[in-house]
Length: 374
Ligand code: F6P
Image (spheres, rainbow, N blue to C red):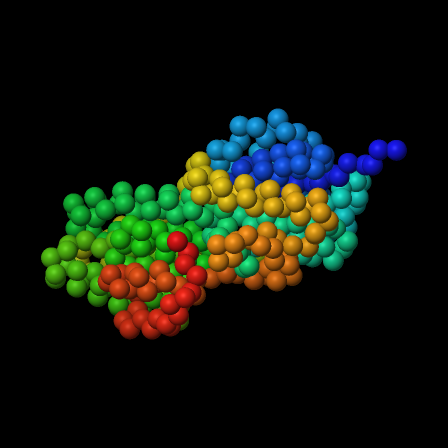
């Protein structure tokens, strides 16, 4: 009797980002070509396992999607089966287990961010076999130096800050650009340094408003009549609060952030004569065609996840550490956030070229061999 083919489910949880389709293509093509597996696409993240909303994914279904942003399967960041918002935060995980069994899946590949990895870890305790693939523009998944989506978001944010320069210069204004990134400052740091922002404000370093205003005044007095400020949505002033937009999103495991750029603008207007404007980049950072780096990272992660799935190595997330591909137990990833360490080399480099991080005397720990985000 011929042996049963391996059946692998795949879903994309949390917010979308560039590179997810590249990962879906890699998982599906690699499982089909190398392991003669059947792939089942699960729609809208864990929602598809709650509702049994699935579709077969064949080799041809994922042809031509490498360059497309978003996810052909759809995503949801409101479908945490352990806190299912549409049913008053009920625990519907038993429904997920039932669908997994009814679909006769051998393993599930969960492509997602920190929220998805945390849910995956809890589902493993209920008997599911799951392999994780880290994606998010935020680059905040513990256990991997890079998530795909991040490089594209940094490119978008950098280009946006570059565009803002002309108005800043022409109108002698303070121009604030708010990036996404949730509780981590990776996007603001990398795009801010890449675009030569004068001030970079990240959640990991609480800023002092008087100091930020002083930077603007000093620049004015020195003949540079404009200031560009890159601020992460999760940044806050010393002793202040994060600016939230609404209710907690269950899958992303936290509140929606946004609006600190406008708060800072008001604070600066009280201290400066010059015009102050804020641009919030928002979801445009999640869109667009993935950069070559993100396509390749997604392809490398996807093919490795396919191998893990085929070899029965569940319970792990594929990862990139110090330039090498590896795997990390999901238990080490769940319920944690990878923020920017203060000894990150890019902070030191920015500081050296005069970028302000919003505090007067920034103390940078000396660790020359720290892994670089570049
Ligand atoms: O995790 C990606 C991300 O874009 C964060 O940077 C941001 O805080 C959040 O998702 C926004 O989520 P939503 O799409 O639900 O507004």
